[in-house]
Image 1 (cartoon, one colour):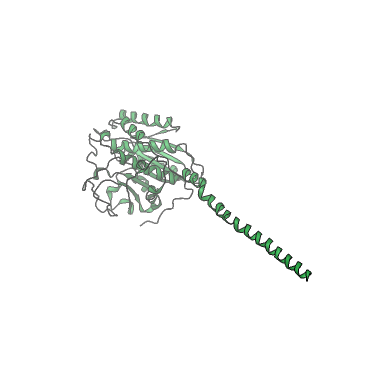
Image 2: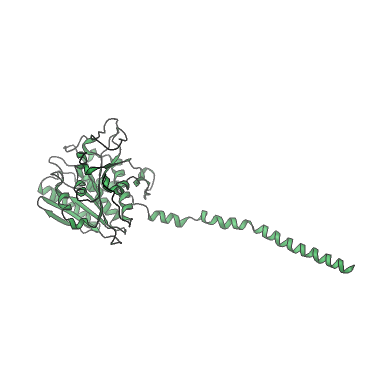
Length: 351
């Protein structure tokens, strides 16, 4: 009998020990929840990655300073020489090594910053620097020159897979002579993945009916207001054109929401190299099309919007500051994204 009593006591002790261990496990169960909350509380690695992939923020003051410095007619030989001096001086201050490329009627300026991947084709940013007679050309095209110089400042020392090239064309107003001379050097086009050409990017109007459209436009106009940035590209190189559709989704290093406001973007795919829409062939992008190189025209639509086109009234005071800044930021956003791509910008079959 005593033996059975001892066996029962041992059994009760064993149950007590197991029960005590079980209660210890249950008391520790909240600890996995603490471990699971750690990634939520410390997302620093993701934040750093986003910052690296963001586009740098443009400076409105620097853009407008270029406009003011170029506030003179750039038509005669002497005036265009003074313009080249200003552009090359600015580039050298930023660490670039600009080259003057003479052709029979004028002089282009070219510079490049090599990429880290020699197999990745280059991206070219370009604008013409001449004007018509009697116009200081604040919008046409000191605005485009200013954006290229701002890209030179922001992206010149930023390592990217693709090479960044800059070009400033002479004699655009005389019949696209500078860009025609540029593309005539076919060897340089072999490693060119796409060209972004800016021609008038600083004027906006906000009243209904102030925006006009060319006949046969292949897209539906967004509004009767001139508050958007137009990007015109050929249908054979849609990836380059489509890159601008995503430009507003690229994070920038803007300090606040107001600084990051961007105008709407209207992308216009042009079939048959513009043969049916000759109004889309009036700037320095079109010689690239006819050499089989993807190129887009970034513009405020020129005389379809601004009343100052080719007139003495095209002065810095007519620049729409916020629109100009937003247009420049869109170009910087898109260029940054394109320069980071290693893959080829595939062409599309002719439509």
